[in-house]
Image 1 (tube, one colour):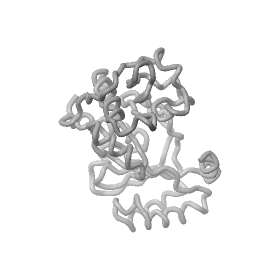
Image 2: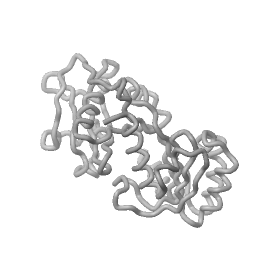
Image 3: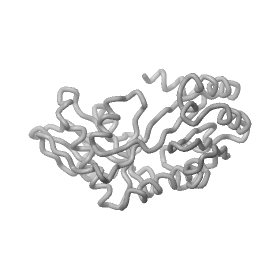
Length: 257
């Protein structure tokens, strides 16, 4: 798999998720489209979006409910692509969303592997490739980024770091769509800063590519530790996304935290 192919596969998937053409992410003109459900969208997405902004760095594709189309067009016209994804412009988006009972909820940066830097890294602990039958016992709170209890059926592969028989680091991937598998990683607090996260992440990314799937990595913009792990593991920033959700959904998330 070549570097340009990886990027195009990601854009094609984003186009499915957003309801646009993948070429829309390569132009310098913003695009507003009506969000629609799609059977090939990433499985954890709840479509249709009310308002979702996606950018690969050139411009913004806004995938929105028809009732919000005019507001989205005005927002994209007023602000640059970079400004659309940060404050204070996001405060304006919040004001536009409130009459519709929605709030800005998810703000994430997505990473793709850089084939010129991706290689399986080592650490002082033994690494093991785990198939689903080997990691069922690890659906525990300390591994909640690597494995998802609510979507067990999507977890397809993992790499664990072991101190003897003790699991100390785990990277897992979920088959979120046909062409792309998402990586999540956890390391026990007392074992951090020893290269374990990068070791399990990079090994898993290589294994995913061997299966002719595109590995991708996501973290919140404020999660500096996770972003550093992505870079160290051979990933580079590829696209950003902001998603609005109904206010009751946002309030429930705040209760859980």
